[in-house]
Image 1 (tube, helix red, strand yellow):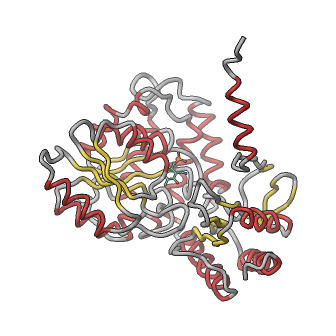
Image 2 (cartoon, rainbow, N blue to C red):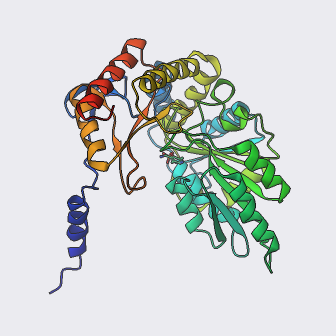
Image 3 (cartoon, rainbow, N blue to C red):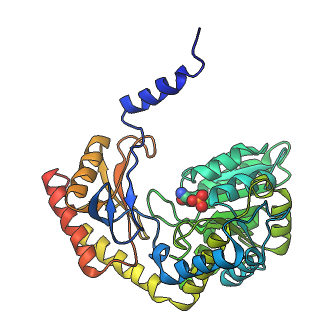
Length: 397
Ligand code: PMP
C-alpha cells in the first residue's frame, strides 16, 4: 500500500541534498553577549536582542513576580476569559510610549501581520508591498482577497507608478493599503517612510509599517521609525511591531487610532482565536517598555557599537552593503563561501549565521551580523579580529 507520509522524508531529504535545511543550534542558558552555543563559548553576533533586554534583571524579576500574582497561564483567549488587567495595562503603556491613541498586543508579530492585513483590504481593494517585505507580511497579503501590487525595493518612483496605474484603472480600487518594513531585516536599510507616507497621502492610501527592527533602535529613545522621521499618525495609520526583538521578550503589537484598535481586535482571527499571553510574558514586556523609557543608555550604546563595527569592517575592505542600522550584512556572494566564513567565525569564537539562497537572491549570500548594546568595545574588537582573520583566509578581503 502507498505510504501517504512518504513525501515528508522525500521533501526533507531534498532540502538536505540542496544544503538548505535548517540545522538547529542549541543555546545553553540565556542570550547574553558571551553565551554557549552547541557547547562552545562564543560571542553572540546574530540575535535580535538588540538592547540585551532578554536577560535584564528588571524583566526577569517582573516575570517571576507576575507568576506569583497572576499564575502561569491566562486560561483563555482575550475575548472570552483571558483578558487580564496586565494585558490592558501593557497596551496603555505601549500606546503612551509610541505616542499613539491606542495599541493592541498580539501573541506574535507574525500573528499581527497574518491577522490584521487580510482584514484591512479585501475584494475590490489593492495592497501594495515593497518587494523585500518580511514573510509574515507576504502571508498576510496572501490571506487577503485584495489585488496585489509590488514595488521595487525602497523605490518610491516605482510605488508612484503602481498607484498611478491603479488610479487610471477602469475600475479603481475601493481602498488602497501600502505596506513596508521599517528596517529591512536582510540588508539593514531603512525604508523611505517619509516619502512613502507622502505619496500614500496624495493617493488617499492607508500606510502600514512593520517596525520589527526599528523599535528600540530608531527614533527618540528607540520609539521606532515613525518617531525617526517625525511623522504624524495621520500619515502612517498602522504601526506594527514586536516584543520579540529589541524588547527582548515575545509578542506582536499594532498602534494607531482608537478606531484602528477596535477594528483590529474585533476582526483579526489570530487575535480572536488564539490564547492570550501568559502573565510572565506580559509583565516582562511591561518592564521592557519601562526600561526603554528610563534607561536611554542602551539605545545609545547600541549605536556606538554599531558605528565602531561598521567603520572597522569598511576599513578592512569588507562589503557591508547598504546597511544603515545595527543589522550589518557582510557580503560574501557565493553560498558555499558564506557558510565557510560562518563556520570559521564559530571556530574563532563568533556566532553569526550565513544567509543564503533562497532567503536572499543567488550570488548575494552574506553573514548577517546584528549588533547588541550589551557588548563592550573589547567584544566588538574581538569580532572584528575574527572577521579579519577568517576574511583573509577565505580571500574575501
Ligand atoms: N516582521 C519582521 C520584519 C520580522 O523580522 C519578524 C521576525 N522575524 C516579524 C515580523 C515577526 O515577528 P515575531 O517574531 O514577533 O513573530
